[in-house]
Structures are given as structure tokens and as C-alpha cells.
Length: 579
Image (cartoon, rainbow, N blue to C red; front, side):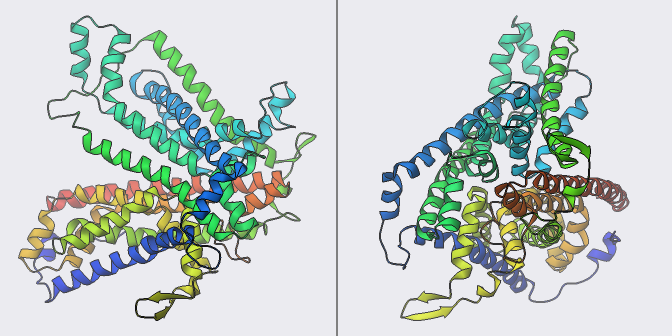
């Protein structure tokens, strides 16, 4: 833990000359990195979508071919259908769950609040594997007579609901938590019953939360690759189309065109979400009264049963994967064994891929946290070079609308290019080509893929700090980097650890951003799961999924312990300094 300096020591030292130039140089470096590793690769995708395999301009011929080919165009319609149905079901189920957790007095509310996030610790392929063990040809529920036709849209939708449910729940939980109880008291005084209060007060109060939850669920289901790869069968979607075009047919131009199609609905949904955010007014003011939960036996009992059923489904789905990984041959020989965790004689390079994933996730957490927090500080807390800071904010939020597959495809085009033609016939060799085919490009892809959410977390933490720290430091000649290291970082350590955890967990489970980029001798655990399922090694794939979940849970537990200690020390320091 860092030792916190006293305020007198901090402000009593004079700064160095040229602080403004140094500030500008750091800003330029941050924005240049975003241009090089976010904007430029994305431009490559757009360029390749309108050229042929030789780089000749063919305008919209790739798109004409795509939409005029029935089996390709059906993938676009299939993706829209899967994403829409998933979002509707996910938001509906998550709203009921969030309402039960937030607005009832049922028992075990804390347990239900936390158990719903378990799917976030697992790769989406694990959800599909769980569905196979439950509803596949030899599934547990299939043997009991429950046949749902898993391989196809049903299996994809069920898996995507499990994937998107936690995100939708979190958004709706926050929306339901911010309510003014005076509105409910006023409705009661006017004689409104429970149903009318729900229709006229509760739903209008969470309409933006519902819309945001739908948009997030739609984007996640629209762009996911893992679940369709495992349980999609012959039901094609855009994500699997890109994989087939790039990996199977080496048709990079058509892959880029499909990538643009995959990108457009996500961008449209992102723009709608930004518009709604601007339209949303404040719903809580200084005189607001927090919502008070009243006990109601029948309502609380129904809520408890509903949340129990949802929690049972989540735990059961992940539990059946863990069980199948611990028995010899599902469903014939159920004696316990650890053989599947040895990963001998299976596709996917065995346990080495798991260790590779830990290394890449740790590197992504360190590099991503360092860049994101420093960039967020430069964009939010410095006062010079306003146009540059605005460009930086825009570029930092741009990956929020980029599917992982598009990022992976963009990195193939950008980092595999030998040179960049410039005006005047000048050809500039690509200085970044050495990254292609290395583990470093996996770290870079993860950082860019998860950049925006981490950036928003950092800016939220920084905006809670009073700007007087920087203003007083500037008036006393204390350089901004001294304020950053001595005040900002110690006070934001919990948020910094949260960002690092976010990068680590997501880097462990992601598949879409890295499926095109991994070197032949450096596969990741998520890629190994795909390879094993393709080869029919379902039990070892389940075992690898279990290892990822256990690793993420262990890292989360360590995070909770560290951040608790940091918060206590920060509180003591702030009280001693009168902050």
C-alpha cells in the first residue's frame, strides 16, 4: 500500500517549468495511441469492405453479393431475430428479478443480488455447453422427455439470455433503486392501487433503464460468437459468418463486409442510447425521499419463489457443466474423475492454453488499467488543449460500439499490412507489423475491446474528486503529475482495482476479439474451448470452462479483500488531512 503524504508536504513544493508542454505531450501521446489502435484499424475494415481480394475498389459489390446470396442474407435476418427475442426475454425476466430484489422484503435478497452475476465469470461457450448437457441429444432433461430442439435458434436464444441477463439486471436494479418515495405516497393519497401505481409511477420512472437494458442485451446477443458456435448447428448468424469467411474461405473482403453489417446495428443502438441519455432529466433531487420497502407476505413469497427459480437455473446450468467435467463419461459412467482436467489427447493444446490466458489477462489488466486511468485523468482533470481532450474522449468511447469480431478483423488488416501508401507516392513501412502473430496483439485487442467501460468507470471516479486539488496545485506551481501520483491515485485506488478486475475477468472469458489473432503456438483457453467442442471433446471443454470460472471467482475474492483494505486506509488518510 502507498504511504499518503501530508497536504503540507504536497503543496509546499514548487513545480518545474514547462508543465504545460509536458501536459500537452502526454495528451498527444494518449490521443495518438487511440488513433493508431482504435480509429486507424477501424478505417481498414471500411476500406476492405469496398475492395476485392487484390485491393481494387469495387464499391458496394461485396454487399450486393451478400444480400443477393440467400443463405448469406438469411444470416442477417437470423441475427436480428435472435437478438430481438433475446433482448425481449432478457429484459422481461431481469425486470422481475430486479424488482423482487429492490422493491420487496423477501429473504436472502443479498444472495439473490450476487448469484445472478455468476454467468459473467464464464465464457459464453460454457452457457452453450451447459445447454448441451441439459437439452442435447443425451442431455439430462432430454432423457426425462423434455425435447426443445436445442441446436438452432432455440439453443442460441437460451444461451444468450443467460449471457445478457446479468447486464440487464444491473441496469434495471440501478433504475429501480433511484426512486422518490413521495410519488408513491402521493399516488396512494389519490386512491391509486398497487397495479395503477406500478403502471403510472414505477414504469415511467424506469423507462430509460428498460430501454438501455434492451439496447445492451440486443447488442450483446447480436455480436456474440461463443454461443452460436456451440449450439447454433446449421443456423447461421453474422458472427459465425465472419468466422467462416475469414477462417474457412480466407475471403477477407467479404468478411469485412459482414463485419460492417455486424457493426451497423450496434452503432445505431449506441446512438439511440446516447440520445436517450441526453433526453433523460433528473429524477432525484435534494428533497427526494428514498423508497421504503413495506412487508407484504404474498408479494414477498411470490418474489422469493421467482428469484429462487432464476437462481436455480443459473446455478444449475453452471453446476451441470462442473458435474460433467468431474465424471468419466456423461451420462453413462458417472464415477468421479479428474482426468478431463489433464487435457491429454484433446484438441486445444491442453493446460498450456489456460496458463496463456492467465498471462494475457494479467497483462491486459495492468496495461489497460495504466493507460485508461492516465488517459481519463488527462482528458478530465487537465485544463489546457480542450479540442485534443474532446477528441480523446470520443475515441475512448468509440470501442463501446465495436463488436469484438470487428476489432479482431480490423487488427488483422491493420497489423498485417506491410506498408501504408501516402500522398505523393510515398510508401511508409508499417512499424507495427511485428506485433502481428505475437501475444502482445492479444493484449492490445483486449485493452481496446474493453476500453470504453473501463474509461467510463475511471471518469466517474475522477469526477467525484474536487477540481480544487488541481487548481490549488497549479496556483502553487505544483506540476499536474505530482497531484496525480500523490492525491488522485491514492483516492481512486478502489476504482483502479475495479478497472483492473474488469479487464482481467473479461480477458479470461472473451473469444470474439482474439479468435482471429492468436498465434498458432499461443492459444488461449477460450479458443481451446471452441476447438475442443468442434472436435467433440465436450467434457474437457467443460473442464476448461470450470477452470476459468474458478479463476475469476478467486480473483474477485482477492479484489474484495484488497479494496476493503484500501477504502479503510483512504478514509483514514482523508480524515487526517481534512479532505
